[in-house]
Image 1 (spheres, rainbow, N blue to C red):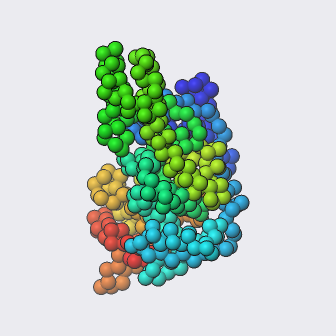
Image 2: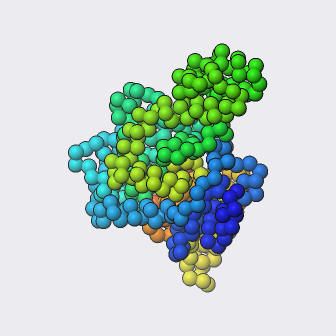
Image 3: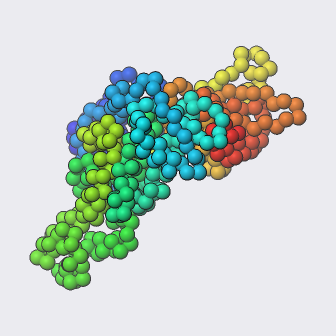
Length: 440
């Protein structure tokens, strides 16, 4: 690690979750900031044992230390481009969510600057924030999995080489949809391969250490591995004979006069060709789509380190402590019967959270957060207010399940639950049976 990085004081700098990438703390810590800051989880011991494979390409790359703050960048972007108080009604068919979204942004009257007011067909309720959060979360999943423009392992994808999709402007549409989500406080895709993301931002990652096992094409994987395994003159001669023409087609005509010492550089050229240069037109159309909304890609490119957690898989799963820090409790006054029963319920709630942390249930903290807020993580700019846990009294002879308001971001639990398994069962049923706004 660079000596300048080693000298950074921990009170002023926070590790951004990748090797040797730091950003300066904000002078004013705001409530409900993203997990990058307020909900930062210390997993330094785990990092020593083995880093996330998605960042193998980054391990030996020393990033410049830059004073950047993602929240400030996004906040300034929103102030400049998002209209205050103006809304656009967006009608969404849940079973055709991606198609509905594309049709919405393709209308001649569509204005991306206006805040989208989401109406899910057949679902009552006003969009006070919850439906919008849920919509953008689901939309980013659909963009990754249903448009046919990404391929590869989940959380580490590459752009496909698909000329039909290019002619159909699918890469452009994906860029617009992603920019739309980010501009209005929604998530980004958080799935690009880190090396591809750097190349898209005009950087030159050290591809000599690229993990070829993440390449989507098994044949290309095998050929790249063959190059890496070239260690002797005999290996080189066989490589030139078997794969020389293919390597030349990847933009390395010098393969036939290469030496063993040049193999790492040849490997990096082949990787760069396959993941980036080969799909240059697709990349260009995708970034043009993002730039269609406020030149957002230009902002990303100029602040690529700050936007790493938006475009690559840097997420750390929620823990019990980070999940609890998101919420406040709406207790009744002390000394009342209601308060006594609420504390019984919260004790059971704590035990249910233990079950989740110990992985003794299918429920996850992300499931609960989606159920309560519509989002699966704290947004970069935070929630508009602090989510809460409130209570209700069960009516005699009536079994009412826990319920949530994603607009108010409030979870309602029944008072007087003294058994953790009972609370777990009814909570699990509520979460698993809910599939849309106001459906529980």
